[in-house]
Image (cartoon, rainbow, N blue to C red; front, side, top):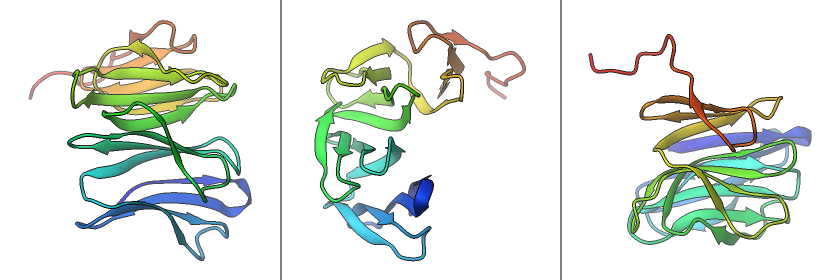
Length: 177
């Protein structure tokens, strides 16, 4: 099972991979010709759902742990070593970086407080800030730094770095069949 795949210039690629016994993150430095395991999750209850690449050295992985743990991990050496940088206990399904290097995490709840939404770790900061509270399935940031979040209730849009959000559901099916 591959949950996501991301690439960066120069042939750098990361994908999350797994089976019933464990999940991992693997890296290619030659456009996918060769792969090496760089991070192992030793159970089938913590899964890396998304990866964001800031540059060839700084990579982020968002995970979901179904019981206790998970969150966001960061490598600052191209994927060789990883550290947990927050969002402990959250189901992090989406990660995106804007042009300033701010990291956005889209969450689908957590195990203890039932918090969900879009969170941001501003570049150079150590504390996460919640920007909105809705169940987030996926996110994308476009070339204008507009943030879009796929939620259970439609598509949220922010044109001001997550300070305000609005649903842009015109033309989308948002009800029951």
